[in-house]
Image (cartoon, rainbow, N blue to C red; front, top):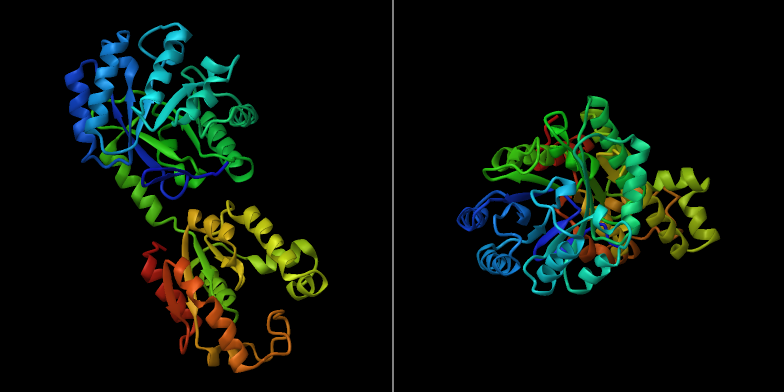
Length: 421
């Protein structure tokens, strides 16, 4: 299962947490007014909380309202019916709850449907049934009284993931700052080591408000905000949330350095780390450390195919660690799987240089397995031409390193990306 869920033009699970605006009201008039306003609001998607609607127990009137919402809203819609047991307004039999969700799914009234874990704990067949009808499932759990321990939260997330939803969501009420930290730590552990789908983690109330803006740090994929009326304690106004999330996103960029051998990736990464205090890692050096063998030896003893497999394996291991700068080997972007991994996590910067510059920089380097004894300008020019278009296609920013000092290149990167240092 992919960690990224694509709905229309929205990619949930990468980059800045997606802002979900609440459409919540007692009357049809109030609900439709918010639906119209959501089109111009600073949100990526909307959530319709059906249980607040005054006629929610009349399925025909609910259906008529959903048709109107569908006609108005231009963004992906999440349909939520929160039962009384999980903080909702009305108490209904599980059979009616399931009937409403199936009605929404089969008629495509929403792209996503919230399914409460407590409603499917004994029988999870509703999840694949709804997915077959064409909707994405957010499996949710809410505890308005307390927060479990970090290990218990992690266990819950793993259990929910095994039930087969597209996204898992947990929301707990903290009774102390330690409870908030337990949720943060459990979520980071889950998203770094175990998750195969996007995770949404919320600590409720004013104590837990920090988790609504911390999503990019712990890879929590969605943050919920109110246009006017909040549906849960601690929810933030949508304009304020957008401003804070953008500030964090713009100053929390992760840089991936790509390019042909000899373009200066390792030197630039070291300079960014030393001069600007950005944590860094060199993927090739990491592979050599873990394999207790040089890159050249891996090539020679095994094959390039074996090396590429190991490269992807170790890229996956470091991708969620707290490195701001990652220097990749020259062929790392030859695999589409690697490209998708790094595109989800940051900015791809291509360092370039003329073939003549490359030859001068690596002419005495005997550790380049693709070069071997072929330290020839035409040979290197041919290799570079094979990869150039691929590099250009995946890069977000291209910087020439010819006739520039490493310090000049680093300054150009920092100024281009707008880091706050």
